[in-house]
Length: 208
Image (tube, rainbow, N blue to C red; front, side, top):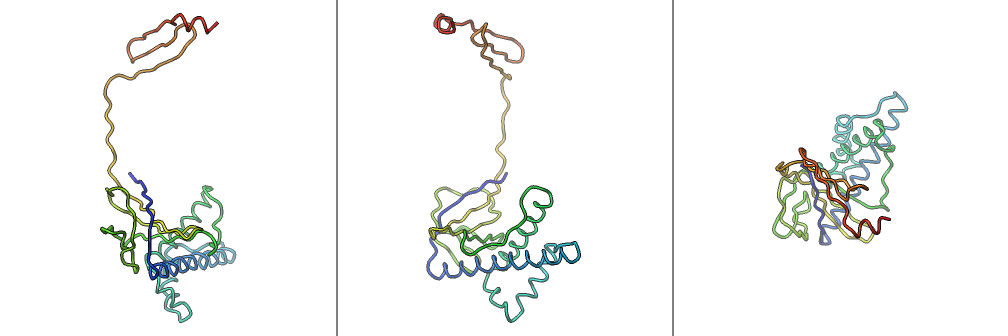
């Protein structure tokens, strides 16, 4: 079973700069390949798959004009491509609207699918080190991913996706049904026998 836990982050100045680069790189990758997929779809009627985009991204990061992409976490950039592929799939399966270009003036986020761990004083993230965090409860289960976001008030948060064991349910006793009626105040059925509770005097009085 999957559940989520959101905690407040307190990155230092250097970590804030690094996060800004990660936000910007992931936003660029999303917008770049959204545009590239749209263009290819218009030309040949087929968009780019995740594998197509990932191969192209590897070459793009080596280009002298885009070397700055190497400053971001590679796993976070790849996650942006997976998110884009999922957004297109949801659109074509009529579960969501067509993917939109991301703006730097709105909420910023980056998802880390790997390379993180919980430390005593916070959360260790790729290329950031340990970011101070306020974790209110003990974390149980396996952390599948960590999404770091920055809201309009410049506050930072981390949403952790946790995989925990399903809580077993016990089925004891009989199945009961309760019905409120007119002729009888309450009718109870336990799966075998029907019990009726007759209206008490105040109930009869005010029912009239």
